[in-house]
Image (cartoon, rainbow, N blue to C red):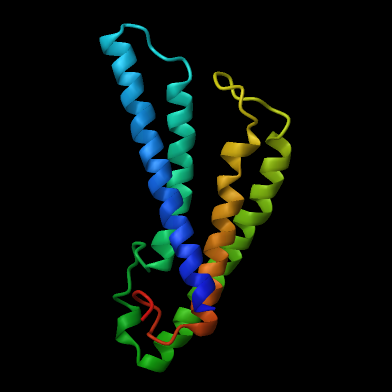
Length: 159
């Protein structure tokens, strides 16, 4: 499981770096063409928006893996360790349910949008919307892995 986990995290991180780099390049090109050449690009804002959506959803998956999401655990910390573990398990199960909903309705949305084209890029709208079910799948995998194999209290990186 750890080999799959490492490969998946590296894939997500490289994908995120690629997407951020592409968004920076597209945004820089838009600024350059608009203000230096006085001829704005029609497609760059749309592409930057879709890249930002992908960055957000892939980043959410990585943040979940690193346990980097915002949480309020002041009440949970008042309980003994055994109760904390049970609460943690309930939280993991709720995240799994949420991730499953993201996957299911994300695929429904992708199927619904697959017949549409974006205005400027003429890109099949299934491509930008596919970030939702993919992120749900990654979040589901990371949460399931933590629920089944985590032995360090749920927080922090792998050893």
